[in-house]
Image (cartoon, rainbow, N blue to C red; front, side, top):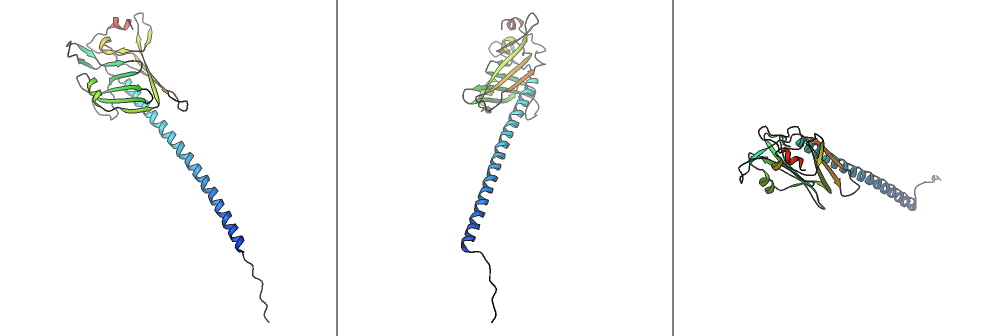
Length: 217
């Protein structure tokens, strides 16, 4: 009589346990992959946001360095005036620099809105006062959850350089020597940003600056 050799195999319980362990390991592995991917995406978003802020800072810095003493005729007084309006929370100027690198002058406008951020508006600058055209264009929220503080450098009568918190080109008939912008975040999870731009072309070739007005700042 032929004897059969014993056969070895897995019982149903062993198969179920093996499947359970495999499923648990796959679950842990997928969770780890998800966490790593989520961290990667979060870091990538932070990097993209930082790059966007750096590019915006660079554009504004270039535009301020390229500030131009844009003159226009005041329709009420028929006098020639310069376009540059600077306050402690608002700045508008004309620059020879355009983000699109198109020929011609561009009027820039930066200002803060409480609980929102810093807005930017740009329009072409022609031979007139660009203030009305700036009002017709929808502003862009450039720095969400930031506020901006502006100050302006000028030379006093005693040749000392002084920072002021306002500068009105239509009255002073010149541009400041430099502009300092301090971008302050609403929360501590973002870093402060700064721009210090020197304006070389700060006087018009045919308009005499109002030195007495500058002394009264």
